[in-house]
Length: 83
Image (tube, rainbow, N blue to C red; front, top):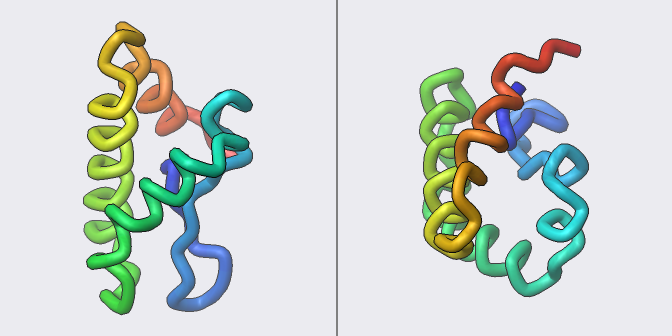
């Protein structure tokens, strides 16, 4: 699973439900991430794009919370979750 998902044809959203609660309900962080990812809006939602957006999202979260060691690894571990 990625931290981003297709919720409808052509609609990609951050999967905030799978983020830690302290991160997923943080309005300021949510808005900042959405602003940073905005340039990717309108592009075709291919697996490559979803992987790129997922990696960018992980990088943004890691940069925003540099004192939390292992946060990227923790969130990246979601790639092993299969629904």
